View 1 (spheres, rainbow, N blue to C red):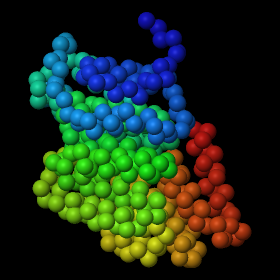
View 2: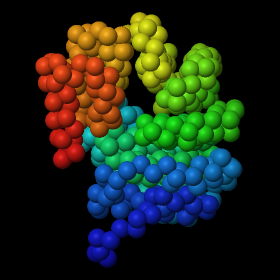
View 3: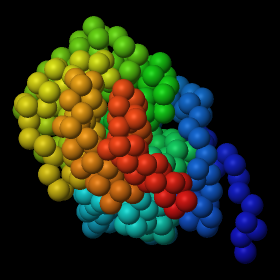
View 4: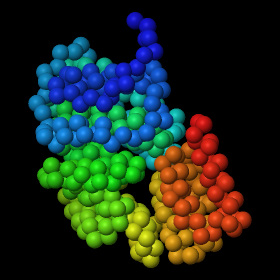
Amino acid sequence: MEWSGKLDQDSGLRFPRGQQDALAEASSYWSNLNRRDFLATSPFIASVFSEPVTRWLVNPAESLTPPSGRVTVGRPHIEELRAASESARLWDSRFGGAAWKSQSLTAYLYERVTPLLNGRYTERDGRELFSVTGEMARLAGWTAFDAGQHQVAQRHYIQALRLAKAGSDIHLGSYILSTMAMQALMRGFTSEAIDMAQGAYERVPSADPRVLGFAKLIEARAHAREGNAGLASRCLSLAERLQDRGSVESAGERPWIEFFSRQRIITDAAEIFRDLGHPRATFAWHKLGEMPGDAYARSRGIRLSVLATAYAQSGELDQSLRMGQESLRLFTRLQSVRGLDYLKIYTAALRPWRGEANVVNYLGEVRELGRYLAAA
């Protein structure tokens, strides 16, 4: 049947109780998204996370519904999906969410993964199929978030969380919920971010320590945005301890959380103290680890913008602008809307010098990037 062009505006927002209904919802959303680019510029709406988060917190695992499809899913299928997910993750880290390969994830989910979800599989393979698909859906949400497609990202996250539940993967479910908290934090909903991060930590205490540590790191960042230095510092310290423990107990078990390393904590800690207005602490944390390399270009751009802001907070304009220019060049290449958000935080710190020629020129370049990304 030919598609009518009409879109179900609730597509991707539902978190069905039934497993088969959940698989149908995910497939329908990916289909709609591939047929038409919808809601690309719509704003983040925190309330749409309420039902999915509540239902996951009530029970993050479930029994596997007996499959009845025609396609038989085996180990080669699972390994293919894992390889595709890892390739997409590495591409996103280096080239950003707006890159063509990152944006092709949704097509892959619909065209390749949907037939497998509707197939036949053993208990073990079915659980792993849902888990790896959940991670791919989370990554699709992450790339949409980076590209500024906030409601698209939210819907991907909701479907990812439901798939993690179908796979009874409490580790992945907690991680996805923390990622949702991070999106809420970055859109200015700090209280909601704290609630979700705390839920991700408290609901599954037996989860991988690195997963729990990531939840505490996001909570620390949300407290810092609210100006609560005490709670931010306590959550950051706990995140450090959990990362140390996880690096010994769980190393190699879950590749998707390997990014949560000492280096990641250093990067986020620098941002925490930037938000708290403590530039000396930002510099101290920065010195504890190397600047992210080319394989993590977006992380490098973020660190540079954080340092640029801290130098501005310290009154060191020349050093600040040098790092701000390098960050701007990276985010221009990556076409990262999330990167533009970091640059906007930095430009706010330049207000004491807004009349100086070099600052005026820089602000003009940032506005030009904003206009370009808005038109893209």
